[in-house]
Amino acid sequence: MKTTLKDIADQTGLSISTVSRILRGDSKTSSD
Image (cartoon, rainbow, N blue to C red; front, top):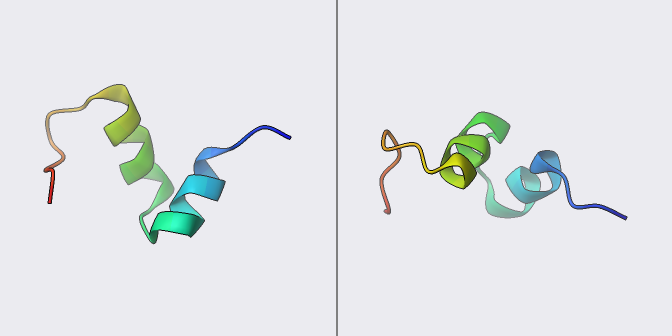
């Protein structure tokens, strides 16, 4: 079974859009 953005978001407590931005390397996310 593939891991989805929703799986990661659920496990980390982040939103799907935030997970997507982090994985793409978007500079608008901080490393906090």
